[in-house]
Image 1 (cartoon, helix red, strand yellow):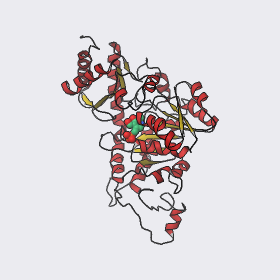
Image 2: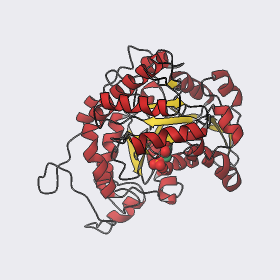
Image 3: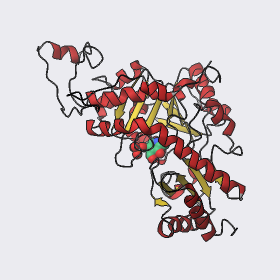
Image 4: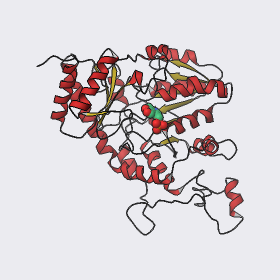
Length: 416
Ligand code: PLP
């Protein structure tokens, strides 16, 4: 039974360690970067067999062309499949490359998506603004925590339920087992964006069909490249690379092998980073809440989905590095962030997440600004909501003091 606490226990660190180590070409401990965009065959007859899908990376070790498969990218893909408990995976040039490819693979013109009303702004814009006129694919946005609303929104043309395991930026936690049961019952796919919670949550263990990631965030962790991934059953990943109908093959959001190498080098310390992000965020959020600040963090017992997160989470990684503070107005949010960056060197006013330093943005006017006013109101994203991706540089004590002074500078915390 997906969702049963006893059967879903999963250790992604052990799963990652079980992936065969890829040595470099000359026996180096690091994998080599396969830079070639095209691959030779020793017998001419092999080439048509690759085109016909009779041979490939997993069938005879045959490669064709870099937009199709690349050996270095495939190493990273195998590692990501392991941490997401997926049969297969492949990487894309960005998180949006993965998301758009998956939706387009699942839906034809006239089809329909039921999506969470709280999503990364780019995903929201893709579903809300891009797909209807270009492809005739429509989306109903509903409160994903309200299962009866999700069920009621499903039509005979619905092909996908789409949500984020931890929503951006409101940090609501999807009830993946229940959504997966609903998707199965209606014969549709549950696609979950797990960008906010790698290692912490493993949606496929709870019944999700497809997991997408922006590797740009926690998984890479250095804010120095853009990448994405799709993790799913082998059949679905193969469909994405079909020469005639594969969205990744034909739209071409290919990951560069140099980027794949960089990300693969950071996976071994992903668990250490996630634990530290989580521990810091937990301390900061607990302290702020005890002093009356409007903080939202899934690790706090007051969070509406705290119990669900705890139930679904893989043990030992905490509750993640994302938290929000609602300062009511955009002006206060801006002054707070300016103080923290320019007076305290606490972190950076920047979008994105999962960096070593703390990144701060006012979601309604940045990463959720694609949403219209009604959408922002429906999702509960107020103009003064500041999203923090809590970093791990400096000492926790100093960071707490800086954060307190930042809140005091806008009157959101009294002097102690
Ligand atoms: N999914 C989530 C939850 C995000 O926050 C983002 C970007 O901020 C994306 C997907 C898109 O990823 P990328 O910028 O790598 O295309």
